[in-house]
Length: 463
Image 1 (cartoon, helix red, strand yellow):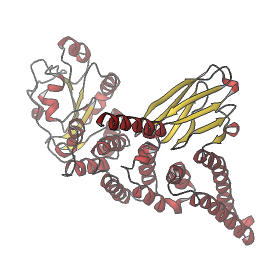
Image 2 (tube, helix red, strand yellow):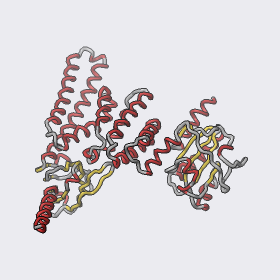
Image 3 (cartoon, helix red, strand yellow):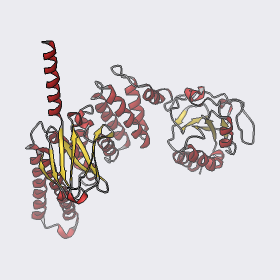
Image 4 (cartoon, helix red, strand yellow):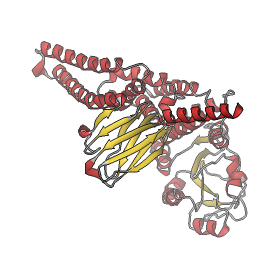
């Protein structure tokens, strides 16, 4: 009896698994012999779902499962990736080429039929809307059109009609359809640039839309929009035309909103925090990145992985205004012509740039020679440079640093260097600007930023 029950359970499992599998079939007679890849999304990354070859008859078939539900690309060599919806329905397509979306017809697959219809109609409405906005501004600002009030009213009515038509399409979609969620998000992400430039009255509502997104929602994770949603969100705040202080406040509100949705999903919390922190750093939005770091580190209800924690800890231990640790120079230090000192605190310069790098770091091979070129000007304006190498090979360190005109040191311990650990260095190059008391004034992200600081605060200030 138990054996029979077991067999029945296995059969049911196989039937369930089969039911969960869906198929994409496509007829592309002009592309026989080409390979086809189905690629889906997982957070910030893509992964391959299935591969196939187009037969001599012009057909291919691909399978996907419920774990792949979301958005995906069909990729044929030499053609643009073609975006489709993976849902709980099989898909049948006829197409000449994915380079020509007008030639693609969904014979089967209701959500893809609706998505394809919107993908054609929505851009046309957006183009028309942009044109009407331009004409409206022209009619309002040009004296040749001051007496055309009726035309302005007509333009406003046409703009309203286009927006109403677009909203009506989205509202009639079934509530459990993936595209019911996806299309408004994609529409908002795609419109960020035009909203910032031409439809500024929509900026507050758009920022609010981004804040209301649930960043732990698997629909977002599977949409291919996660990266663009985060970048568009903060780009719009940065380009909202608000004073800098207001922008900083708005960014903190957005960070609170994003992190608040992630506290119950530690995997996504780590992944999104890591990406957002890197984005803010790259954009030199240091107040926002510091706020993010401290917020996540102080959050007791979640766990941060060690690498991310070390990266964020930099802002708690080495934030602007803190005192940087002293550095005892090892015996193999290179000194430029002049008096040698035993440690960082003995330097007499008004400012010191401490830069961590290594001969094996590709970016350092650009940044350190660049610092060497600027060094004479920096030195003349009271800025000393100390290069801390993370090389663990003495010969490589010597060959890399021997011609630099500034102090260069290495304890040859790589990432185990106490100096690097004291400064919470997790990547190279890392740069700190200190004053004479070793107070941290700036964490430059590039030599260009550091040189701009010298030019603005030292050179021009002394003129």
